[in-house]
Image 1 (cartoon, rainbow, N blue to C red):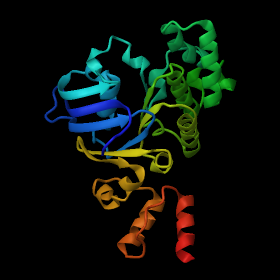
Image 2: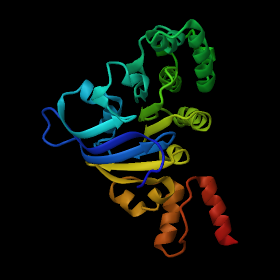
Image 3: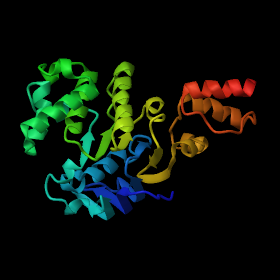
Image 4: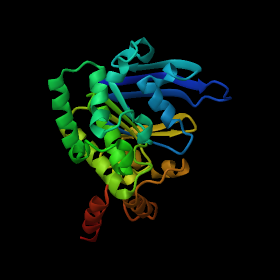
Amino acid sequence: MEMNVSKVIEIQDYSWKYINTRVPAIRGINLSIEEGSFVGVIGPNGAGKTTLAYSIDGLIPGQYNGVKKGTVKVFGKEVEEYAKGELQQLVGVVFSDPEAQFTAMTVEDELVFGMENIGLSLTEIKERLEWVTELTDLSHLLMKPPYEISGGQKQRVALAAVLSMRPKILVLDEPTSMLDPVSRERIFGVLAKLKEEENNTIIAIEHSLENLVPLADQMVLLSEGELILHDETQPFFQQSRLLLEKGVFPPGAMLFFHELREKGLYQGRYPLTVAEGVQLLRGLKG
């Protein structure tokens, strides 16, 4: 897929094999991601999604032993060339287990910790704290211990702590996998605000396609360590047969229209949401 705007991530012929494993976790990856885009990354378990995320934020090869081939560049610079801590100010990562990221005794201290570490002024810290707590709806929880709040609130704290650092790239590694549907909606609500109001590049590894698809500009399919498909969201999901072969089930509205197309009853584009599907059905009946 040709990109005509500024590329913030460029991955070329990239493979990574963890030490003491027989086969690479990912291999032959070629992927470019442009500034300000929202990219959804999907695939079955063991596809290499987390390895890809770690490769972008420098955890690989920084904290893992293995064999690397090819290059991963962030803002035109290979991840290994960044000084310690430098890349983490550009790339923020949110994991599936928020407690793994907690270090402080209160939510406020958790949000302030990273900002203090990079030497921000008290004025800047206060401004960022107000911004991020409003964005993530955490103002009423600032004095609470992060370990005593709900799972959805914990994940919003983890996300807010990363956002307070103002990273240009946000990587989310299955951030809603441990959440109930209501909490999941709230996390994606925050991401929707980011997409609308900020210019972050967002890369979301996520199983909840019903929430992911309406926000994503592009989608990436990984399977058995290989990049199978990368395209804009609408044409990506036109490949429903390929997705199903790889163990990925598109959202219900898309599957319904896929069945209509398979039966020769529909030839148009697939809806990205249920509401869009209802409108298309009304058009067909009309």
